[in-house]
Image (cartoon, rainbow, N blue to C red; front, side, top):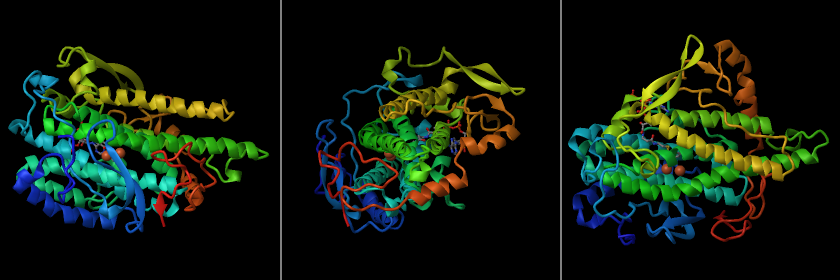
Length: 471
Ligand code: BYC
Ligand code: FE
Ligand code: FE
């Protein structure tokens, strides 16, 4: 089962050839996908050889194969983690019942909505990042960008397989819509806000892959618990791919920080910008921006949708098996609400607070990332610089804090006070223009742009100097 059949037009490990109807439906969608990829995927790089990994198995060890591929030739396919025999639903009202192999009728709409929302983010991110190849800081980075892009494309396949395979006609319609919406488009935007934001520079890309792909990790983790077994298995394998995306983000920001330290040390006034680097304040502002937008992706702190997702067994908690109790019926969570300008704890039923439960897991993980960045700053001789995560209430657009203003420590403040400080907390147009001004492409093997440190090592045991993309 783990082996992937590459002799098929659509590589898969779901025995696609035995289901002619599904195979035909997907083979009809495939050219539309490729059209979308050619017009909305990496701009100007479609004919280049890129050193990419392709999944060849879903086994944990040795699942990937590395070789030069032109991106439109990438073997996007359908790969599910192996089935667990006799799997049971692990939480919610159906706890202990057999996991569903077909869509449970009463939850059909809810399930389709979850799959569509998940699926929508994947092509959205490719669209957001499509112009970045023109200003890559090195061939190594360029290759990593494309690796992330082709895998997000595959994640779209993963969701489209579910829509085509289990939802009939409306699933096929949704699959078409997934190729019709566009990140940032006024008329046909992507579903979630973070996926309509511009990604014009590599600092943004690294913050996005650190914070927004990390939302993906937690959402996929929650869906990997799903009682709908095909979704659970699909998400389990997607998580394997996701590790690299998070690596690209975390090490990317770390390299910008390290380089900033080095450039500061070279400058008589310790001025990073004077040396053509990204200064610490600007990096902090980008962190504030992308962390807060990514927090919004978890939905509202108080959400009956979230309660329904959990109750129905469609979406669990992160690592549900670490909890002792799986109905979440007799517990509560205190969530601070703003009342008359002050924060007051309000007791919320645990199921209603499920978005917040997942968001808390995510924040804990982000804290670890920041610890690594701050350790790097110490190693570079700058223990005086500390990058911090703002409060989860800061700069929110979704949820119970969206209509109130907070400072980065989480203190409720007036709208005027927020506006007066906005430019010190969030990237200004000038900050963005400055970062964009640094984005000059470096395509010579082994060379790297001035504003970012070279990585410690290359990809798949290759040196940094390797020709990751053939120009
Ligand atoms: N922007 O009860 P609420 C990834 C809407 S990332 C705009 O608060 P709910 C990736 C919401 O739809 C992972 N709208 O939210 C990363 C609802 O609308 P309706 C993506 C938003 O439903 C990088 C209303 O507000 N996966 O894979 O509990 C690169 C109030 O709803 C937003 C998933 O999202 C927002 N941020 O939870 C590539 C998993 N937030 O019904 C890929 C699937 C909320 O009033 N999705 N709204 O019209 C879900 O589980 C849930 O839909 C959400 C929202 C967690 C997103
Ligand atoms: Fe993804
Ligand atoms: Fe990702």
